Image (cartoon, rainbow, N blue to C red; front, side):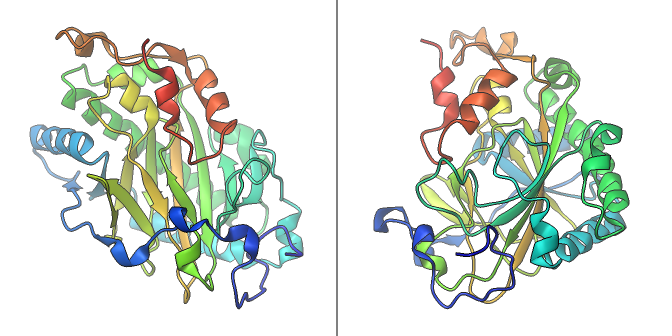
Length: 338
């Protein structure tokens, strides 16, 4: 491959060798079924107790859920998706000015997941942005399309507020004070991955992203309404999660699994690709501040179960996460209490 990114305008008639998974690791798309009972939670409901209960059930049983009537203006969502597509349609030489495979960079266009560490690549390009505080990071964001900074900055603010509301519901669902999680996580970082999965000549041989959990606290995912691709692992089976109009997918990340003492599960999920159409998704990640001490909430360790995980700082966790290949065992396993 001559170019560093897939979104170069080149049409591939077959999958380059560096993307082909060994047979045992392929997605087996014919065996995947629809997730028929995805929890869809109406945040516009006046019944807070019901919302809290539904979120608790979803976090225990699934590790993810979808939210509707979430309060993020639909116009802001539509503009975010449009400007993201515009960015990936830019000439490849324009995009490559932003290219880097250094995970420590706070703004970069890259490809796959961790190009320098992985054995097989993934059929994805992505734009990674740090988003909080905005006044610190917006100046380094792409200046084309010209509306990018304003639209994405506005979207980031809205999504952050939604994430905080959901963290309150999750705290309450665990029987904790509503601000418990926010207080532990401190002044939360916020990152975004704008993912672009080009049409793929042989989707059954590769992934957009292989199965993984998210290392952060909470992920708010905007799915492409036209093209499916998100799959989640439930009871040992991969299930396809169809996009729901005007909804966000909310994923529980590793930090909330640790804080909940393993009661809530960080969801294993993956992205598959397709032959016909490009797919876009926008993942917003809320993260503890680096020195936040993550450990199971004390009230959740008092029924004789003890703490499943030892205390660790988020900086320690994140460093470990990025030092490995994405699909190795769950990073959280390395932090279990002895």
